[in-house]
Length: 103
Image (cartoon, rainbow, N blue to C red; front, side, top):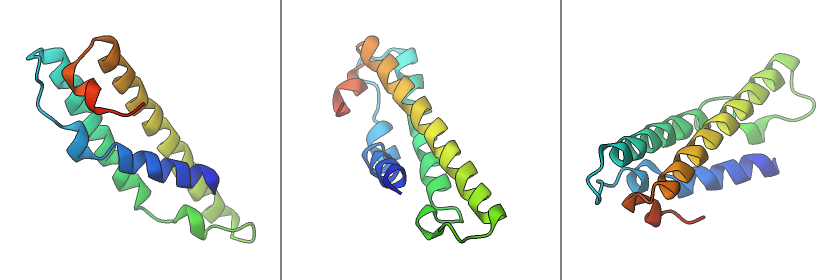
């Protein structure tokens, strides 16, 4: 449950609106990274809102429902890692958009 709350907070902090800002340094690579972050942030939000809800799954839930919840949580972690990797690359390249993120 704590992981789910942390992932939800992460999704809110990486909303597509904040990640899709236009490139200020006019490099195509930074613009592409910003676009990739926006796409993955939108995907994260989509996956978060799919069923089953992670908070709705208890230990007594049927095995197939628990497995779907586990698969969803793994997918959210993978997407979050991809977003973090892209944000780190933006910071390393000193892209203007990287300054808008809170680390």
